[in-house]
Image 1 (cartoon, rainbow, N blue to C red):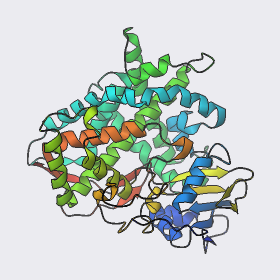
Image 2: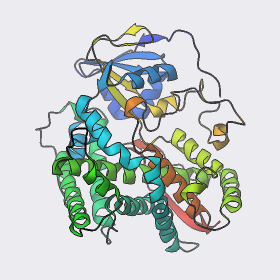
Image 3: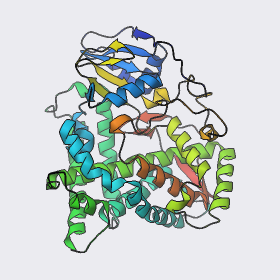
Image 4: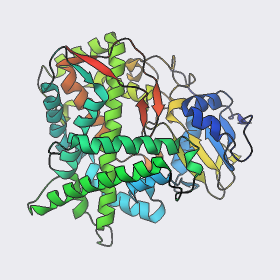
Length: 448
């Protein structure tokens, strides 16, 4: 790795653009390539998202300044209509005083002490999933990881199993993700919410199914009367500084937000990790050796997390190559600036983990999957702001610790028994709700 250039950033205007639409057609066609193209122009790139002025940032220190300034000089960008339909007024969609209130209510539920209590569930669910496989089986990795992380999400959030309902809610989430991804791609975001497109009708139906399932799980978890230690019970017991609890609607929104975050992002991260391990047997072999040394065949616990150093490096490098969150946005307020450059109020601020994680100024051979780059004893550290798969600043994802622990423990549990061999074929990423494989990742189960 190299350190980032400390000279003044280069600010340029992106060429081209159409009347009224600006550069949105280019972004909608292939957003990941568009972001990398902008990165090649300069450090701070002005472009137009329709009629709205927009600025893209690529230097880690400028990204740090942006993310650290959200809630002060910048504000959280409004989410597309579909995003808000799914997550409601959950923590991720609120700003200002209301965001601070909800963060104070939700944060205690995902602190390290609470995550420790869920580690056993993570490992047990992973062992149950692997127990259904036999060497030689052909499995759809994404479907398997989605079903597994859903069971973990349901058991840790609601304190119950999903009773075989994975297929129902999994299909609904797949539809919601696809339709929200269409809006995030650019052109759909220009349509007013009242335009009844076929995609929006499909999304409404999917969200209704998710609401019904989440409502059923909430009802089941609150009907017994016994004291529980799941995330939902903690949310129900939480009170703000005025002694006020979450309303039923707020409880639904936070439950769905935690459910989506705990299920969707982790399943995607695990899918990409298995894919990368399949294509890098030397990494897989080193990971297997660490697992034998640290675990010796037993299930991992929360206490093992710190000892599984190479497994952590594998996960971190996988999130660098394929960051689940591929774009982060904000809006400039009065008096905003970046690296001394004034930013007009109302300007859309953009940055992309996908593009920044591939910047050769921060990562030597950025397209190479090399987990040991995260070993502090082997290479210099990447600059702050060069790796941000969960955002950063005050609005860093609250579930960061939960997601990292879950991904490491699931990977460690399954990889002790099996390799997932996806074969030599290449799978291109697709920018949807999260960064998804562009096609099925089908793998052969092999003994480790």
